[in-house]
Length: 265
Image (cartoon, rainbow, N blue to C red):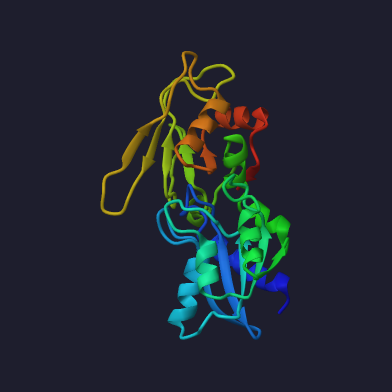
């Protein structure tokens, strides 16, 4: 298969975990040698391993040595310590000989440094394979990182639960009838305010398996919460892709605001 076809497989891995990785971006990786996939992986929920580490682990679990193989990854490997060690370290330790990257990481601690570090260590690096698709995959993460705003969708019609589950959060109000499939829910409650999305405090509900939801209060200004302030508050809560399932009035306010990227359903 071509580099583009292998990258499509890495993108499929990333799409499968959308909505579960926030505030990290959903990334996919595939380890390949001799035209065969040795292992695949995608970003785990926050605090867990990144896609590159998961793909290397899957390779070893399948009984393969990743040394000398090629790795296809949708986003530039990280090269800094955060909640997890740098993925560049794992790649070098595995003796991967070639890394094909879909798009650069917009995070200031990376932004090309991961690629330069790999190249300095003798790893061959290809950049820009399926770049547009890979950049779209991390659109919410990039926008939150660079501008403090999320990727935004509004629900116009019926959708499957899986569609809601692909977003970091679903924003609802009293007009919402169902939220099946959502990993996280933001509740907007209060009376209307002209040219604003909501006038009251919003709550981010972040349920964890086997526990009660954790509630975070988003800040409220003296004149309520404008659309932009709501969106920025969602990013501060670690939500980078948000789907609004709200009343027709709020939906139209959102669309008119110019912040909406997708009309869904």
